[in-house]
Amino acid sequence: MNVRLPRLVWMALIVGMLAACSTPVPMAPSTAPTARPGPAGPVAVPGTLSQSKSRWVPVAWNELPGFEGDALHEAWNAWLRSCERPAPAFAPLCGDVRRLTIASPEEQREWMMQRLQPYRIESLDGGADGLLTGYFEPYLDAARQPGNGFVVPLYAPPADLAARRPWYTRQQIETLPQAQAALAGRAIAWVRDPVQAMVLHIQGSGRLRVQEADGSQRLVRLAFAGTNDQPYRSVGKWLLDQGLVRDATWPGISAWVAQNPQRVNEMLWSNPRYVFFREEPLDALDAAFGPKGAQGVPLTPGRSIAVDRQSIPYGTPVWLASSGPTAQLSRLVLAQDTGSAILGAVRADYFTGWGQEAGDMAGRLKQNLRLWALWPR
Image 1: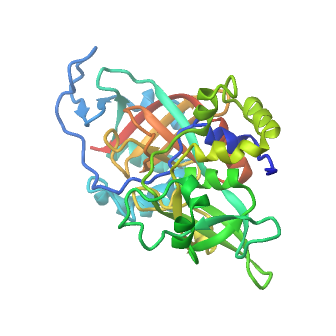
Image 2 (image 1 turned 120 degrees about the vertical axis):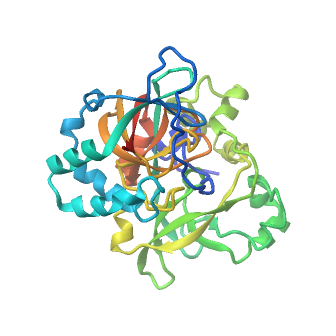
Image 3 (image 1 turned 90 degrees about the vertical axis):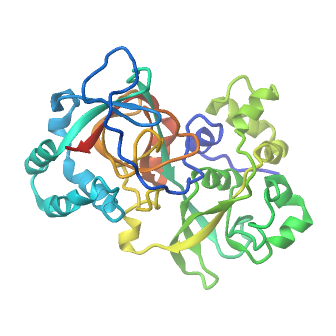
């Protein structure tokens, strides 16, 4: 079959070159760092706090690069969202956070310096350098009924999903009569491109501009509602392992797909994981934010990150510094999400937003990272 080739970000996400938050992890209560000296390392700093996967070393505010120049009011929207489901340590501060929404950046900065202590986040062996990647919310055209090029269904969970674990694989879902019978009537909408559909599965949520049966259009969100409990496999790695490409870059992948359209399904089926969705309305307020992260609050573009919750509790304000070919970032962000590939002490996935520009940035973002947790004094 002929498959329309999407832009760079679609394939970059698929080949596993960035770690997307495709499978939300059930939220657990945030726990405060243990107030004890960190494990033996290069430097034993008094006041170091410990988490399961990280140690937090107290530092002065002037260690945070760019702290004096950040537009803090942009981060305040994300902080207000965290206050909808605050971690216990931050609940007492939420009254001030709300009050300071209309304050000047100078007043916000002064309050932070009075009420919070910055800690440099390190691995247990003292390493402070890590990795920043990006993720986003795909934005696709869709239709309520198949036809006119809309041929790829996006499904709500089947009725027997909980009773059958693991459920059918991606290939079985698309070819096996029993699986298709179980999904009869469960299609939420249809999209045009199977590659874009897989990207939506990888990201775990997305926006659809849906053409209704009467010809009208409506913007809705598809939120994560479960998986078939099959393992995730990178299709880029499959291509490499098969010797079909020399590397999983966009030129190699796009050239292979263009030359082998009859094998695109084989490539996609190499990833057995399949994601099911639920539809959510998108009013004007909801449309200004991303999907809900693992903390249970909507994500804010450019100000929400996914973290390893064994390194940084949900709801923690974090100073992020990263420089590279894609972005120069020194800013306040909130730890509001997690993902199966976001593991380690100094590790974050940066929520870039939705649409083409956000997707392009997320597809390219893979660069150095340093993090500082800002914890109540």
